[in-house]
Image (tube, rainbow, N blue to C red):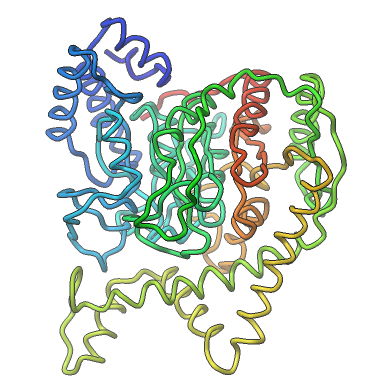
Length: 491
């Protein structure tokens, strides 16, 4: 049955349509793979009984010719998405054993289209982290290893469980969220494809909030085509989310293989950082050459406010987090640690329920929103955000179709290697990704090569608002040129 887990979503859809195997067989194969890979800690909750029940129901629908676009495809769900009747914790102690009585819009659309839920995937606590080491369930392990080394590597964050599970063939695709790079960075670290859609393209309703003006749900999969298939089901207008945009959802899969001839691809000079590893520089040049060979035109562009993006992001995101996380008070749901007064109950619950990184960001956020510092920090960061957005608008106004950049400043690093003494060291991992969230634009990370130690590296393409189709077309060019990478099984 193991060969069933190595198929792409597109291949599995064809196999199910041809009745080569059933959804139940496909689901069982993935459940067995999950059981054998528990050392990766990718899943925080497995739902085998529910998965098999869903698979049987889908098989019955397929037999009647009623299967949807994802009929029978087993997926993993990031533990930030509310799943009705299934524990949802955001990988934080403060949510305890919270079982939502409702389903997030994104997951309800996946079930509507026939997908099967295998379980809930690990992530950084409240999505705050770049390595999946802040989860209350412990760190996720990257299925990739450096050549000749047994060092345990991080899969990136916050969607580390999604990235690790997809790369290790434990699920055919996964939901993820991206606030500052939480889809694209782990995708680059694990040789998977991650898409951060335009802000407002996918509903945020039923997703545990981190920073409401930055959060966006998106797919992680093994190929560009698979991510396009998932994205079509995940996207769409939702009246329950006031930031959801009411525009039609195109057939993203149809964009795969479309000619990119004549497209102008921007190469931003500000992304050439001092001390950038030569292998990242080389990868970037190779990616540009592949797009040029496919008929695209390369144009150097300027995004002058890029250097302010990271500091501005780490003011805006914690500010919104401190506001969003105020609801976790031990009164209505989740963890409750008693105190002698209501104030003490709040303090005790939050002290025990929130991890170090969440506490750090809540305190930063509360500080920059305080009366004495609001103008100096938060207001100024919002002005910088407007300038970052204008940089991109100016580029696109000159006929640029998409912008090509590295996805990360390095390959995956070891568990415990970064951020211990200096949290900023960890924050710097987001240097190439946060601008996209600050401007609300779509971005895709595609595997593009390996470093000297055999670890995967990714390239990022940034698109115009609501023009994910162009990203899928360009991403497929990179994928075809680079080939696909899978980790050697050791777990």
